[in-house]
Amino acid sequence: MVIPCYNSASFLGQALQSVREQSRAVDEIIVVDDASSDDPAAVARDAQVTCISLPSNVGPGAARNYGIAATTGDLIAFLDADDYWMPTHVDEVAGLLERYPQSAVAFSRIQRFGDEDLIAPASVPEGPPSNMFWRLIEENIVAQSSAVVRRDILLRNGGYDAALRYSEDYDLWLRLARRYPFVCTSAVTACYRVHPNQASRNVTEMVLGRWRVKHHFWRVAKKRETPAFVEQLETQMLRAFAYGLQTAWDERNEAHLRAALAVRKLVPSSTKIHKYWARRYNIGWPFWMALGGAWDRMLPSVRRFVRPLLSPLFGPSSERTPLPDYLPPPGNEREGS
Image (spheres, rainbow, N blue to C red):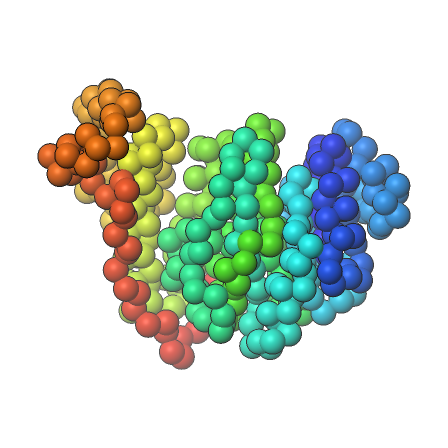
């Protein structure tokens, strides 16, 4: 298994302890110190695990590639240094790949902790393996620290894109999901720490990074895939764009809403949707925030009476309608990205 670490030495001990406490023993543990200033190598030495110390900071994707190259096992589990696993994680998730040899990636649900405390919803039905590409186009449903991947497939497909500093895992999952089935469990086996210093707290870069990955995939697909596939890809991207804006509005999350508006040039045929939401944000945001604050202060009995009157404003905030069904995955189209 591979643990990239950049200035997370204070969390690394807990991560390593969770690996040691697995109900199914981990054969090899490789920490990659991505030129940290807080000496995670010392933590790794104390835990008697292998540590690769990089002379300069290369980013999480490239750091994981160094770790992958140093592994010898058939399956590779990933754990970020500020996260940790529950004791049955390896047994349950690696076990899925052994049970379903046609799958390339297995993953589980996660528990967010720290600045947030919530369990991620089950995004897709658990096994048997399925084509998750179209679901992934909407959003990244595979948490990095919950994933176990076949080593030969990682190497065959170039591993992580070392040039990406954000959404490098999302890029990998899309490339693999286009070619191989994924499998998951609805069990919660990994814990994702939410804290101020993590890279994903940079909302604008996180959202831009995710859409840059989708945009790149779309550009490549236009050259390699059939027109039917490209059309479906553009449809799914547009749905994801609209859904992200609606979600940010419903949750009254201005940072996410502004970030989502900023990616319009990366979304094909998004001008109409962008104009609608930009106008709605510029004109209605102060009123929406005031109304939302009043809504939060209402008694539940009053909300039940008022909700039908405000439904045109609140939209699907409490019961979101799922996106329309996907077209079936392409049959014999050219694979890759």
